[in-house]
Length: 134
Image (cartoon, rainbow, N blue to C red; front, top):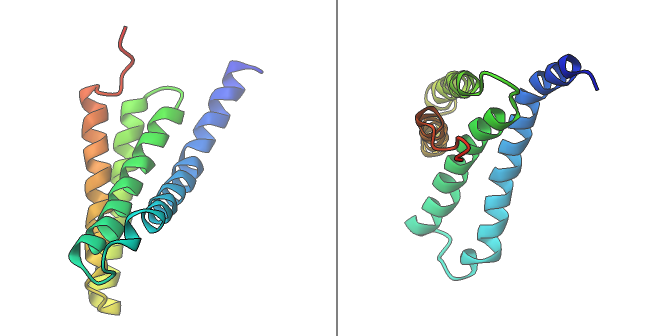
């Protein structure tokens, strides 16, 4: 396959693959939690809320940025910054919708956790923690 065509296909796949991996990681964390710890923790406890709401969104935000970073053929660090900015934009609009239109204030924790996960992953990428070591 021609290298130019491969690069174009990779760039086209960055956003859809990031979104799909974000949804899969979100669901996978919830399934793993239900299979393991959910049997032993009260469903109304703060520990359960932490493990389900906060951790699943934190992981999903980080996976969104990381998968886009790994798929991008070049300018990977800039891609991570753009994906983080995109998630911040969508998360900011979601905060507006949640707070002023639906009055569902508890959803703020999940949104903020997802934004924090994406920012933390972007900072790690920008510092070079995921670069290949020789």
